[in-house]
Amino acid sequence: MSSYPPAGSFSNANEKATYPRFPKVTFGQAAVIGLGVGALGALGMSVTNKIEQLFTNRANSYIPARTTATNLGLSDSVRRHPDVINHVHHFGMGILAGPVRSIMSYYGIIGPVATFMHTGIRITMDQVVENAAGESGLPWTWPINEQVVDLLHKTAYCLVTGYICDRVVRGVDWFNW
Image (cartoon, rainbow, N blue to C red; front, side):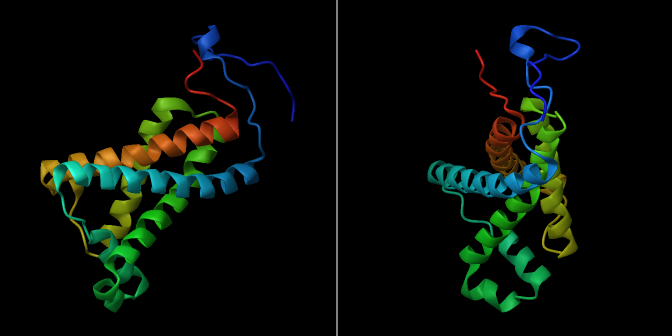
């Protein structure tokens, strides 16, 4: 690893736009970091979910549990342990999406724009497995309140994951004022 001084973007090379030219870790390390950070993002998403439910009185959705049970052939488990299977889905998908964001950081795709892009990736990952299992409709066919809730929680996941990945993999602090 070379220790070049920080450099800003080509279009905006001011002091606040500076970030390390090279990642702080290897590609393999970035991928492994993404697994752990994805779990932290899923934890953040679960916490925001419970806080939101305190204010909205929205019941738990068991589509994630049914999706995971269907895809893994555990259909009887949903009836017995729906909350556990829900967490398996959320943390499993979070862990799988984490390396995507850490590799984005590795290649210099960082900050809120990268988080916005990763949110679309994270939603797409859920939709692929949910629709493959036949457990969900396409998001634009959902009631608008469910679309808003899903976007907010996936964004919370991506904000936590993105900030930590950018900080650990690339050495970027989003709040460098």
